[in-house]
Length: 96
Image 1 (spheres, rainbow, N blue to C red):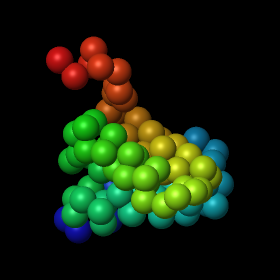
Image 2 (cartoon, rainbow, N blue to C red; image 1 turned 180 degrees about the vertical axis):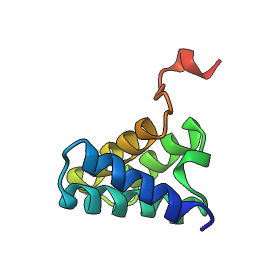
Image 3 (cartoon, rainbow, N blue to C red; image 1 turned 90 degrees about the vertical axis):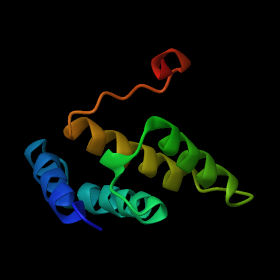
Image 4 (cartoon, rainbow, N blue to C red; image 1 turned 180 degrees about the horizontal axis):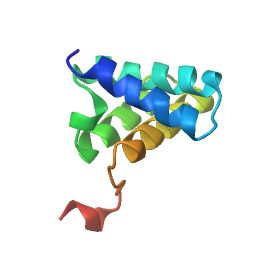
């Protein structure tokens, strides 16, 4: 996927500089990769509605979704998007 390797490189550098473990990076990057594969593009190209749709999809895809899988997806996306300079706004008023 175009741009994913570069994005992941920047993400790894940020995770390391902030003192997070390699395990944290590996875990977050797996979840970020899953989002990218789902949409066929890198997460920084997604709009908030697409991210909401994906999170809803995760919750609905099994009768008992793994809370830790879901949480790590949220945390990984949040960390990645913040590290790329995105402001995270998921309230209704931010859609205007």
